[in-house]
Length: 398
Ligand SMILES: Cc1cc2nc3c(=O)[nH]c(=O)nc-3n(C[C@H](O)[C@H](O)[C@H](O)COP(=O)(O)OP(=O)(O)OC[C@H]3O[C@@H](n4cnc5c(N)ncnc54)[C@H](O)[C@@H]3O)c2cc1C
Image (tube, rainbow, N blue to C red; front, side, top):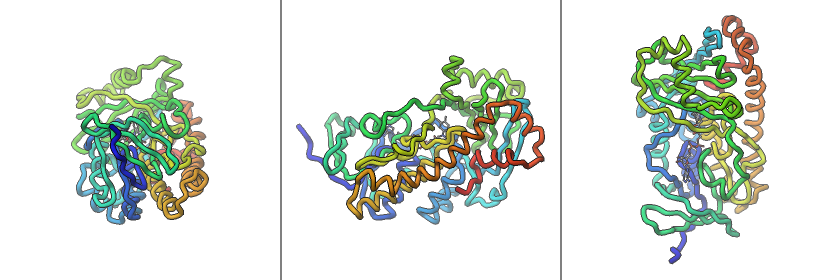
């Protein structure tokens, strides 16, 4: 038996940072929508748990009091700066003045379990209907938009129709089977684990370690509250394939074999397993929208190709998508050309520039001796030094 369908102007698939931010802005604009996810919240997401400036700046744009509500209610660590370790194991450190402002630090760390849950719980009960956990079974193009077929707790198939579908289901979602260009294999692969008791941690600083064996990838150590440290490794897929690297095992090996890590992890104990995930960094500006749909966050491949940062762009693209949705609803125009003008062009213009810069610098990072030189002349604040600060977007104003 076919169940009667619901109709709603907008459906968002995926309640991560991109989907929830989009929902927050849609609610602010008084637009009713559905927010669907396959998971119940809170849930984990494999991530470095590092939040650059763009995240809070965008959320503050939606709700001026967001930082005042978020920071006192969540376990987080404000981040004042970064240490970049070169292969010679010397490090370059820079800090930002804004660290003094507890409500607008240049960056912070927070587990994705806590952050995503906070965002999810912040969505409006008036305008947003949350549907989760659901299994999406089919997405069909209709004349007036899309029809999504899904299952909730029972086996019963249900249907919802919308004029605009916003795909926010991340790198390993389902929407790519039905809308948008075919996904290319994510160019970056990463592994993450949580530790306690790591030596030599400065709670205000995130650490990035370029090791001879991992270049142009890197190991990160991001301090969290309660003496926990998010430890991970990010590598280009090409390197993983060429050298047949098992990323999770490789991370464990690096922590044991590198003398500096061996010393600092001597008293440390893992408090989680090591999990792997891939990063959607193959940005193609022309593929961000089509008739009756928009792609946001990782689903739109908005992860920085060098640093692996994606939360800021996920949040920002969700916000921009909601603004474009508002325009489309008002004009009743959901054609690709209209959505391109109000969404894809804005995202494309900003991120093409940023990613081109990252790639240029990423090219230099392939050479260990360059990193060694920078780290050894830490006091010389040259072009490369300033560029590295910009690359690891903490404190970035954009
Ligand atoms: C190891 C690792 C470390 C990283 N570290 C950082 C970092 O420190 N800082 C940073 O800025 N970025 C980091 N990133 C990138 C960052 O995690 C992503 O850019 C960010 O999560 C993107 O948010 P999103 O909302 O687009 O997607 P996601 O966070 O992936 O959310 C997608 C949502 O869609 C849901 N979903 C998936 N499939 C379906 C389906 N079939 N049906 C319904 N719902 C579905 C999921 O349950 C999830 O809730 C890291 C990524 C990795 C892999």
